[in-house]
Structure formats: structure tokens, C-alpha cells
Figure 1: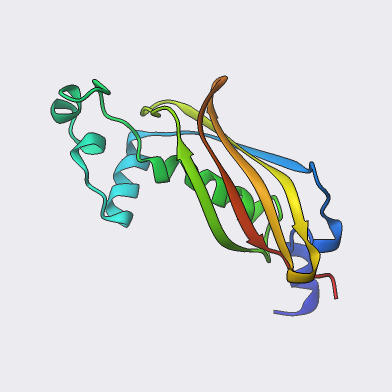
Figure 2: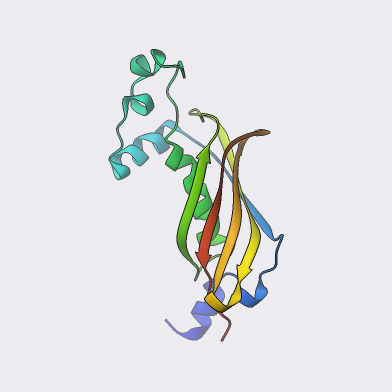
Length: 147
């Protein structure tokens, strides 16, 4: 890959970021998404996969894997903020409400802290279904410098 291809694909460099920058990504979670996530992750918990089982729980219906919901933060890190060239280093998550098949999840990241000497950026992470906050956390990302 030559330098021009890299530059065309690259997201933000460390020097381009500032506190308060944000990005969002929305996706409607489908039955196929849940099935594929279960296959890839190996998480076949009947709470996600079996309607009869899930009906007997306090949720009363199947719920989407929490990690599938919050994987939308990874989509943002890798494609928008900071974007291609950055590397995920860590994630703190609190799940607040269940997500159901057919819900549209809106993931949001906001730059909250920049540690320039270590090339680390911290982002407040939120996930919503409509106006309901379903997950929150903090994302830690390594971001390349321009030079």
C-alpha cells in the first residue's frame, strides 16, 4: 500500500482531535444480527436465542447480546472517531436497559480526554434506543500522530 492510499483511508490523527468532538452510528438490530453474533462469539445463551426460555425470565422476551449492542462503539472507533488507523485499547461498560430485536440502537462517542504523550484518547460512550440510555462506558483508544 502506498502512502496516498493510507492517507485516503486514514481517520483523525492525534493532532486533529479535541475535547468534545463526537460521532454517532445507528443500526436496527435484526434477528440475523443476533444469530450471526451468537455464531461468531459462541454465546448461545437461551436468553438471546430461545423465546420460550426468555419468556420465563424477568425480561419476558429475548434480548440482544449486550456486547452486540456495544460493538457499535467499535464501529465508530474504527470508521469515524478517531477512525481508520486507530486501535481499540479498552472499554468500560455498564448495561442499563435491555435491547430487543427490531430496536434501533444509536451509538455515540464523545472525546473526553487526550493524553498526547502516550497517544491515548478517552471517549465517553453511550448507546440509546430512542431517548432511552441502554449502555454507557468509557473507551480508550491509541491514535497515531501525523508524523
